[in-house]
Length: 584
Image 1: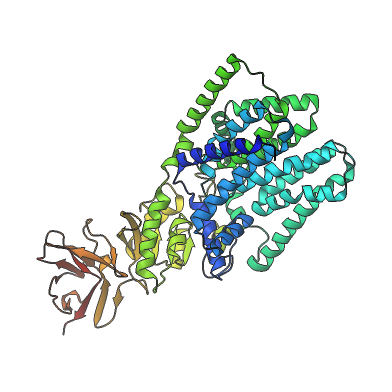
Image 2 (image 1 turned 120 degrees about the vertical axis):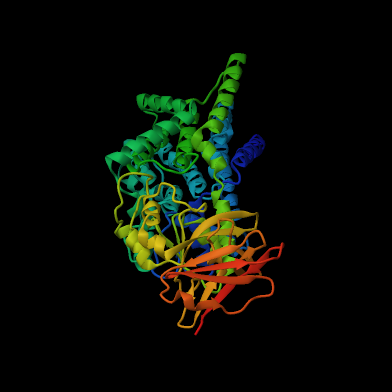
């Protein structure tokens, strides 16, 4: 290795870590969906998201398998995806530096500075999804294909070995096949003839292999995610254009230099540059088609940052160093960094902490209901299902075949991939716990609004404040099914068993867990109450017994039963269950 590569690599690694720290502890909820598949695979439950029908709710097979590999070695899922992300971006830096090791110049360093300081690389190096792996494989594919462009008479083995990163890209993301198609097209432009198609052999085998596995294991031709997210329309295309323009502006002047370099390459027929330039153009067209992306920090711009880097290095190999250029470059980099920092989408990555609030609630549910295993219905399919390990329903359909095939009153509005709406299906499934989001109330999602305003839902479910203490204190809101067979109110001819968390007439009442038991606390100034309606014999019920440190007061009014828990104790008294009996 040339002496100049290692110091440069260490510098860029340090800058990447510093940039990533700005966005810590950002972790995408979708990353936790993938990690749930990895975790269940390691635990012998297959590549599944929950019990029942197997569904392909991920779109990053290779990333899921690599994450599972880290888990097998005893590394936590979160740490595994962070290490994989940072290592993958470092690989990109190494590939560029190694490719130009014989003519390492200041221009290469300048280009990589723009890349390493960009929000997409910084945020998604630790964001938990597969974009860093896409970056590394895409970066590796460019110089390997250049070998074919630069040398007309190369062997078949060179074509095949050059296509290995492209094949792995296809396994990393289904849309990775776009880059293979563009690469073959560029080789045809370079007049490599029929041999150009050799570059597609391994990627085609990778796609065919995954298709065979999909048909065998999931019984479907396409990923479940594609049915939800691939809905081309004018509405989504307009959103895609807005997403693209905004992302290009945030990457200014890096993006402008790339466009300038692309135009220059087309005019002078620089086939080497046309390879990453054509890939970038194809990827941008794809982003318009799918309607852009809802995730913070422009995650789909990670491939563009990689391709922009190759374009700029190839078309602007030399920079004349003067005081003026150094001054302009310094000011430009400062403005670039400020633009990354203050852009609202990038700022959203720094402020997105709700996944960690979800961890608190999920671990509380796991502690309280490990044996009962209630079914959890969620709109955010990562945080709560991953950490609670409970059987779950994805109300947005990414991990539910029925919803993917029958999307209810889904409309071409709202967030891409988040507008499935079939409240009747959810109510028919009767999940034991419903989470609209970690905070508790619906937040703009059609399914959440429709379900929340449904009279059947309001009559069947009770709003419960749940407080967890690990790894920090947080209180969220969930909805518990009153007549759940595993965590609900048990009624018989002679008794009514009420889990204490249903005593929620007062907002100060929260469910906590003590020694593995869910319950509530009461004190002399904070009593708890419950209203039970539809009791034709409401006058015939009373508490089983009076307890030493608290009492149960039963009051009837018409067909309603008011049950209050009171105590004279100034210290909190923990209650897990209240039993009422019929009087004769």
